Image (cartoon, rainbow, N blue to C red; front, side, top):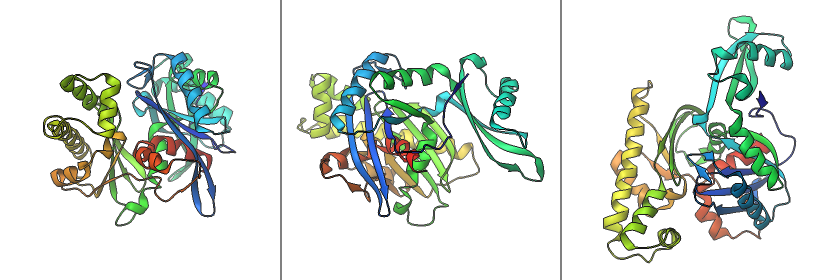
Length: 355
């Protein structure tokens, strides 16, 4: 059994560290009466196959990259929040007797764990939080349980500790996205009770999340992302992996790139979003969404928002979490603006410091 700290409340600021399959992203935030301020941030690519489908396969390579990332960011903080992916975490609301201490609740959960957790308890890290009393039954309380395999937590802790950081919190990606969503509500045309979808397109993973009143009601992960566009650039134009990635970001590719490579990729992405919407509609009581946000590095592709909006007939914007934040003068504002859409998870993790 291990303790995840999914739900505890930290006492001082923490770094938000997003470990994806292609890069690590770090951000440090501070808070004042004027809102949030970006104090430090950095993005660094990971060596190939360090993380595969959100599973850490090379702890040493990850630790080395994180150490370089921290040094180059200029941050002085060491307390850090990281996340495990939603697909690797079981979350369930359960009912337990009222009046139990935290230790008694933990012992009760362990006794009844086989009802909720399909792994041996010695292989599991879990956390819980008492939400409140059960309606119409004051003898019971509602408890939110979150659990995952211990190795998912330990690999992250090992990497961070080797890099000189203190892994203060291991969070759940979905919880961090909910926190980050709070910064996007001012982009909504109407109230916060709208049905809002977030399509987060990373290098290898596409995560589709639907929220109502700021709470996740649907989430789905698929293997799809910007890596496929990079691979096609590499194949078609005979470039190295590094050259293809650089060309994708900065341009300079042949004239047929937009029609022969980029357009088919955008069409495939729109199909993934459309299928995700259909899955959501078929598994819920909803048959519409009010707003779609695009996040992740791919969301910055020129013309993508207009193409998605035209194809799906849904108001679409790029998630702009950092737009209203102050920025430390030492930070390159242009680089931060470019990386902003890919920083959603890191920002959501850093926000644990203040919520």
